[in-house]
Amino acid sequence: DNIPIPAFKATMKTSVPMEYIISAILDGDNHEKFMKSSHVIESEFVGPVLDDTTFIYQMLDLPIISDRHYITKNFIDIVIPNTHYRLNWMINDSLNQSIFSDLIKEKNTKHNTPIFMKDGVGSWELQLLEDNITLVSYIVLTNPGGWIPNQIVSYVNQSLGPETVLMMVKEGKKRYNNQR
Image 1 (spheres, rainbow, N blue to C red):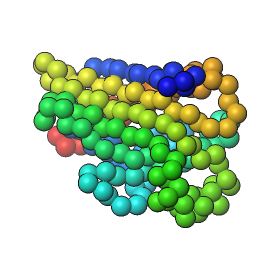
Image 2 (cartoon, rainbow, N blue to C red):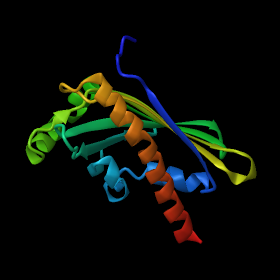
Image 3 (cartoon, helix red, strand yellow):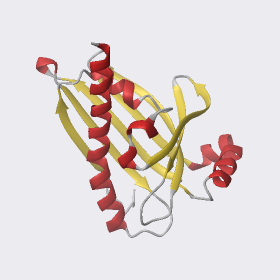
């Protein structure tokens, strides 16, 4: 409620099998290897795995504005097994500060005190359609923190959202081709 930044959704259909795209999305230890144009320079699983919940730290080296880093809490909703999944994430500052305060201090030192993002939610939704077509959607709403006009935040989300989907599908396709 009362958030001046709009949520953004990017969607595409692809013939890449769903499980390979899911594999790329869930590969939090390697996002920096195939998400270069999203400015991810460090990505790793951190902390405990709690009831199918994971935590991922990511560092973004951004052009023009100050760098950002964050920790997401990640969980999966199985809507229909083998057919429809939601891979959800959220940035919860109070949870991050209570569990990861030492890690945040360490990463601040390592990366020259980037802005630590405090609020955000998102979801990957993958659904198997007819003829083995996968519908891939990425929904994101983040507050990058710092002083950035809302119009710039909206513009960045509109450009990075589709690019992020394309990179995940491309990595999924690469994984699929390597299995054949």
